[in-house]
Length: 245
Image (cartoon, rainbow, N blue to C red; front, side, top):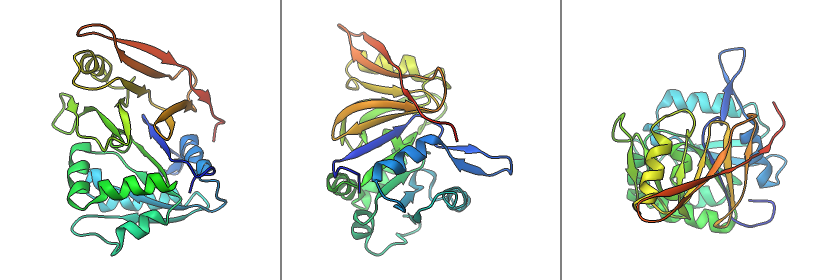
């Protein structure tokens, strides 16, 4: 649960784990920030890899990376069937639920088929910290831009809507992201929202954006808002710089 009992979401634009010198991955300062939000010395973490079809190699790498943390780690898989008999009880018993990237469109469809959309809302309202990167950041919002349909990005408008904003991820590493999000917000397909560069996370308490955090100097977050008929404006938000690993 969060330190203050309030609903927290940490939406990561990119950079949740970083390579180490042994061909493995270690949690970035953004992941450690997510853990700090729980207020627990040894938090219970459940991660989901639904967006990549519960790929076993991805799940194995995730356990190896999470082993670098002092945490009690589990995962919830939905392919070919749920690996946890009581999904609601399991997720509500966690301090942090973490969602990996992949196809946000597939993630949302599978979650809804299993009732996870309602379970995630209940977990969030009870104070379980929700976090994720890419698809795992987009899913909590009203929508955003996605490559779920192919290399050419398209809008996704059926997010869980815990946060009533659009979301942009990988904002500085994919040249399609910024102009498409601005277009979609300007034309009203998506509501105004927030975007994050690689190495940046957006922190919300309840439905209020409170700050951006980063471990990359010069990286930014952005507020994207409608600005007259068919146009949008973008305002930079300077993230709070976190300590290096």
